[in-house]
Image (cartoon, rainbow, N blue to C red; front, side, top):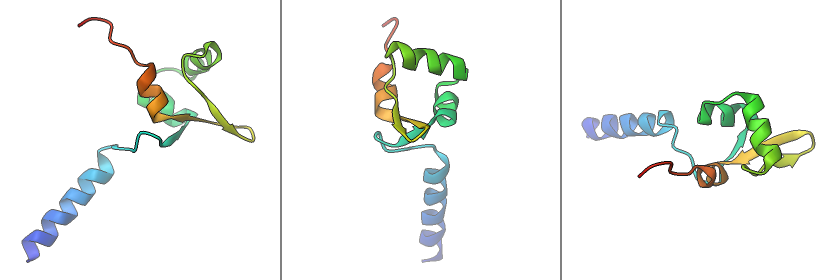
Length: 77
């Protein structure tokens, strides 16, 4: 029984650290920049050009992970 509890704890920790998020999770600008590994000025440019949708509450901006994943395209197959 102790082994099952230990395994469950290990799996829960892996899930927390794996970065797996639901597709409609809202991400801050900083999280989005880190996720895409780009500069914040690039994110601003892509948002201004309409490549990535931006959502706002007050003066804060958020990005949906599903929108970011949809914006990614395959360059070569």
